[in-house]
Image 1: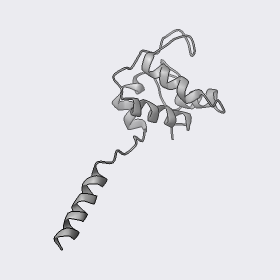
Image 2: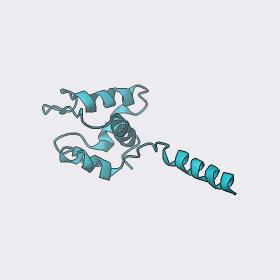
Image 3: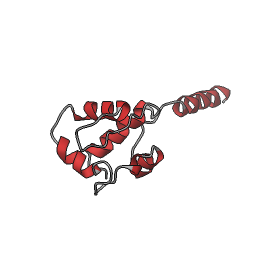
Image 4: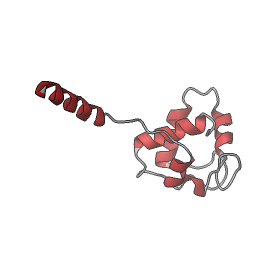
Length: 106
């Protein structure tokens, strides 16, 4: 019985330490202030997420390009106002946000 209990506790501890991949949504976009410049379906300062998804549809390298753009910033793609760099946003969250945007921000 003691072995069984120890085994269950060990399995529970191992399961608790498994990292869960980030899942992005509007709440995550708000958390990192993305919504100060972007909205799902309308242009604000930056492009609407749905417009970004449409522009990069079918582009196999889009996710990598956009992850770099979010992390390092850039200009000239959607207008005169540059995308500011976001180095403090964790890489996993940037990837999740980019994947969410490319999927239509649903």
